[in-house]
Image (cartoon, rainbow, N blue to C red):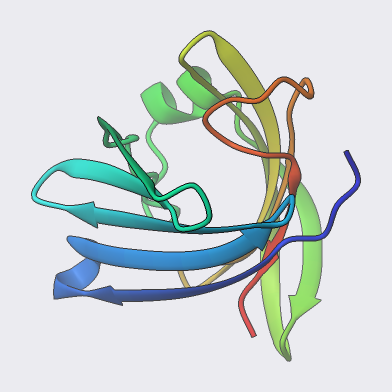
Length: 132
């Protein structure tokens, strides 16, 4: 829907514990990955939803299986927060919805993600997340 989403993320234990907070569509949303589960907290509606953890992509070691599964293609380079990143395009499907992502990766770490979904309310909003 063309909305820019600002998000702040944190991680510990080599990514086994992650947290992010974003303001989107007038709502404050937190996502917590812990103990193999994803929790989405809608602070505005005072709701928590538990979802399966989405598979993590290791951009430093892309296997043929992962490249095929997510239709990953290298799409050039882009500088994000002063870091020259490799840009990838991919598709992610979950809960009957498919999103197209463009991810700028620096040393294996996603620095910027632009997501386009079909506009239905679902597991991921369309928008842009950039690590600053």
